[in-house]
Picture (cartoon, rainbow, N blue to C red):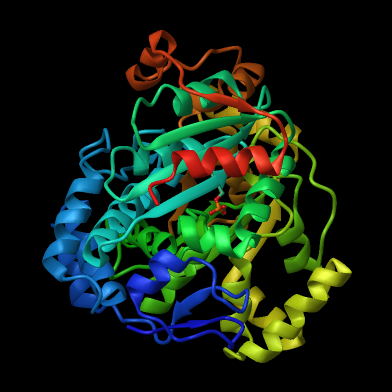
Length: 466
Ligand SMILES: *Cc1c(COP(=O)(O)O)cnc(C)c1O
């Protein structure tokens, strides 16, 4: 499998390079030169296989020839053994007939674990194969930080420095990061905002000699390996709900467009998926783009689903590349215009392609709260606000009279991770799962630093492997 950049001007690479590189040298994102196909008989087999074996089967064509199939199989087995449910990604059904794909059974109770538990192991394996190391520096406003830390802790060849804005993440989120006691993990609380943290990370990466000396790397959602890992649960859910004989639709709470893009990739590979519904909170750039044909940045407003408080959805570029006929130079020009003008009109063809494969909608904060309360009322069950965004959009925009195609809602976080919003909506405090409850008694490990690049550079130098 060879990978090409969406902007058409970066070297063609194999999986191992794409894994460690992340972003392409031309600023684009790597995508496979050609997608592998899944046959009906593959899908029929999936019904009787455990999740980690389906993952190995689906990912094999993406990782060859960098990674041997036996090694891949042992990495997927190991990665998904950390999940607290025997099905890894189970499905459940509400009394209203909506299906939930439960993506929150990993170590940090968010869907990020599904990709990152595998990504950390893929990094470790590839670094050992090359006899090298990497220093991962990231910034988090909450969810990604703890999932990345759990994915990388105690892994050989990896040093991870995770920045968060001091006092601006929830106590649970902070403790999920800082109570990890591992020699290769450093938590840094920056005296500033999340944007300050991101600017510091960007400035570190822009310092070329530093970046090369430290072998800086990232775990952000533009890494193709994350997208590939996320195709797996579309297949396992579809099979459970009637594939290959019948198609399934999905409604996906969306921020960076990584999860729903993986659904589109699964569909292109041959998983029988009918509609993919893009669900946003009031930060609705994607729903507006779908409606108006213009991708226009607005100001980010905080919400109860903070993992979706995003205006620029980086993975959307991969869909634009596909819908635009894989023309890298043209997309590079479009993205340059989008950068300077904060807006981009989609061509009629691209817009038609978007509408042919996707629906889109947004949920207000009131609707999210109402949906959480309604599910508690109908099913005695608590859902988190990200899941509620998707359920709101799925129910509101469902075709009248129903359809024979089942709809699965991507449930991306455990309600206890967003207990405040759940309590506001229902008056019920979600019970902390044992893994979270135990955090309260553990020691925290973190370093407070000022919002200053030179200080951070010294800190990373001291932490790094070199
Ligand atoms: C990251 C995240 C999302 C958004 O996923 P994208 O792949 O960025 O679209 C939704 N819900 C939760 C809980 C998340 O952590």
